Image (tube, rainbow, N blue to C red; front, side, top):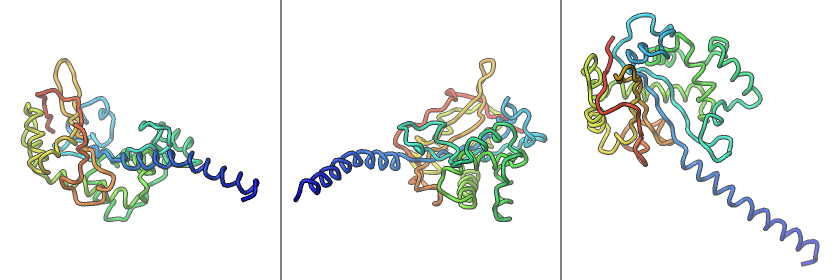
Length: 253
């Protein structure tokens, strides 16, 4: 091997050595990628500051879980962190759409869905009257690697499954009463399997010493979002910490 050829080979080996850790790092983040399914407890949400001026709360808020969003959780920009900088995967339009998103969701591009999916989405996501689906698509759905139809089909199907569960029935039965975190975690485990409650986060607003349920969040594995919801769907690697105390109120319509 002559000197020139040897230099080329050594350079190639050197650059391969540099790239190997980067590839391993990318694979690690791919393995860590997960989703969060966020479902609002509609009466609690509408009684909060966040829901006070929303068109979806113009009438009585039904005692029901409603779709807030389905959020991919992965290091999209490769900076080694999972944070808000990984949202809005829109390429050259990112800055413009982010600015519009903060001003007025109605100014965002419409989300094109089939008629049947659009009807199902309106049932589980009352926020469509406020164009919530447009916000969720540009901020989160654009980072899912799925088209809008698949992304919202997954979000809707997951929401429908939770809403039809015994866990949701327990929430409805407790509406207007004080409930316990332990009882709700046990109800979730009874529906979806032992250990699944580790992936459930209960969020409460606190006012004058009282805590009231506003939202639940479910941590899901990335490969599970388009599959039927089961114990295997949940990311149970660590316990999801919420903000609800041992006992709290569940508002009713």
